[in-house]
Length: 350
Image (cartoon, rainbow, N blue to C red; front, top):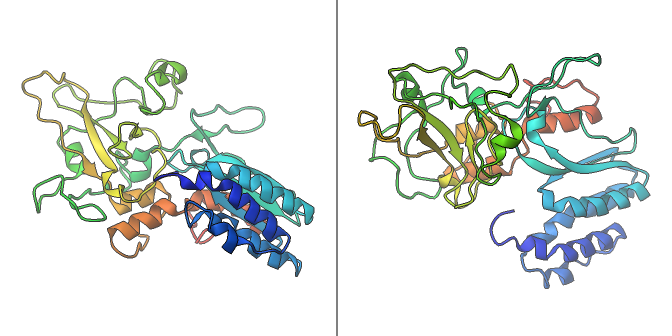
């Protein structure tokens, strides 16, 4: 999904490798010479495992995850697995539908020899659903503010520190300075957007509010904005990178897909004036962008706040961006492990 996207050009070669591996033929060395990206054939590697395990009657079940562009490959895997006696489901799931504060869409394949393969039942929706004759409706998507504890009284407000990005680079504030979004809240300068438009994504265009709702027609249980007349207020959003088409989301909504590479240090919290008007001569300058921390990014992936990320900043962000959100993993794995999912128990997806 990032970089030069050469893997898309190599997909026919990956399909050829999967077909050969499913028949017990390893032609990857030859196919690799034609690949534009030497990593492309890694997507065929699971079929090597599956062929070897199938020869001894294993495994009982399979779960695989990748970026949405890999769905055609999962379709090919599904055909092979069905031929070996598996029940198979594959499709695209949105992590936000399962309580993850991030609209991360991924191609999922689930297969089983012992039960009917099917996707987990979503627990959340973009708008909260009312209770019906069939039981309670789905809860509203979890926002970044909820996940990070901003505005909550029973959870700490994370501190955002200035500092170089994963690979070093200039700091957004003078050396040794420290900026926190909790400081902004304490000064009365941090507030939700008063207009009720809770998602502002440049990729989805300016017509989003017209299609999905504003203060007047959003869900009744959506959090109501509050603000004081005397304060200069800012609305905080998360910007995925510094490109023109970067996703920008209000903290009152889930984050866009978190991915980190050489631009990890460009995923930043950005502020916009809410009220009074930006022309007010008494209004302070707009705060500079604040880089997201590994702790915050981990929380938005549903990892525990104290998860022990290893290595330097770049390595930590790589681990976070490449991980399957534990909460989504739990929903995928629990039925196959025949256990009840506890959203607060991370051992299931460890």
